[in-house]
Length: 522
Ligand code: CLF
Ligand code: SF4
Image 1 (cartoon, rainbow, N blue to C red):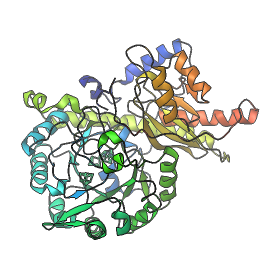
Image 2: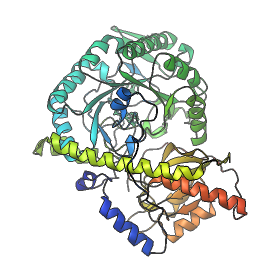
Image 3: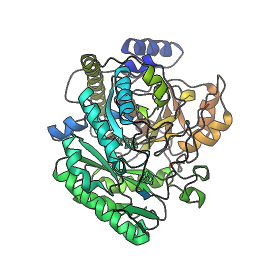
Image 4: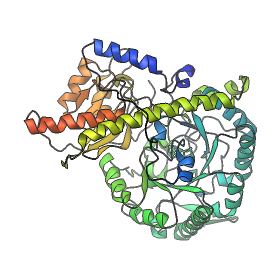
């Protein structure tokens, strides 16, 4: 999503472009044009988001945007593309495809040396104080490029010791590197595990290259799954937090992923991230070319829901580029080209980063308190009605994006138990230079959020509002600049009241689409 560029100064506030004074002013202006704001309760209180996590685990996840859904509204990650080679072939991967406007794993604009990567990390950390995690996720496999990967970690752990190190691998050589991973204090490792059955694996992986030999078919898949399970066990024994990423491929591993979920949970994985297959002919992948489809939004949600009782499910993954920079829903990589980074005068100021992050923590606490207060108004509510709500946001857990500027919508499920983040949907930009593209609205936005009862926005024009309402989606701007979860709970309470009074009739919504094609910037 390279077109979603926010100015450098914008991210240097806890609200991603909107500081608190500015929010209050925007709220006042917004209310002045005929809408009403929600209630902005905020007070001090309990810790934001720790739940029942042990303190040492919370310490590791609290500002990691991938390991904590709540943190992803506030903290950013960056990837450095130091690992070009791969030792396996996945039928959904084509690293030759390179488009600056495309956002998916394996895609990068520039490959870096470890030294260039280290300079880039300092440049980004100085510009974006809420960048807390450095991940190496390709464009190939980091552990198929161990020298470059670990050299990069070594350089960064010396110059920017407050940044968490993160690694994402296919797992084939993972057991060989577990000791080195532990030595470099890499606290977070992701393994992509799509199967634990070699017959299914043979449909996903045409070959692997292992110990100087190429293996194919079932034999290749069996070696891969054995190595993945061993690597996962070795990491969790050492107390390293492991996340498992799985690509949901309808007709191949969709039902099987429940079994994968059990297998990784029993080996100590902390989090399971089931992602939709991205498959389009223009990507040139085997699956893209043979017409393999990805899941619909409701198919993905149903699978995630069915695994949720087993372990923590990640639903906020953005399937990032291997050179992504910024909050998960944005990509600022275009600001940090090698040329731009090398020309930068970088001053790494640990104290000012800490000071900034303490402001972020205050904002998180205020948000958690506001949510809790609103939740108390649902106490005793017995309704089993659940609705989905799409939210236009640019971070900080607030409804703070205009409908026409949204390149994605965050999706929440509202129920008697409160508001739960259940995913996001990417869309084409509706606003194209001052006028709305009806086609983009009809073909993309409505299809992407068709399963939602309402969409919350900071602002929306009359035409798109009417189109959404014709599609049965309530376009709501009365919560502009309020906290998302607090607003969703308030809306849900009103929704139930309206059903009971007969003002509205609750009915089922349809399915929605997950965007599959290449992203085209406005
Ligand atoms: Fe990067 Fe991955 Fe680390 Fe995150 S991404 S290496 S754990 S810092 Fe995150 Fe991006 Fe999804 Fe990966 S949103 S693709 S899960
Ligand atoms: Fe591509 Fe990653 Fe699969 Fe390698 S492991 S083929 S880089 S998706």
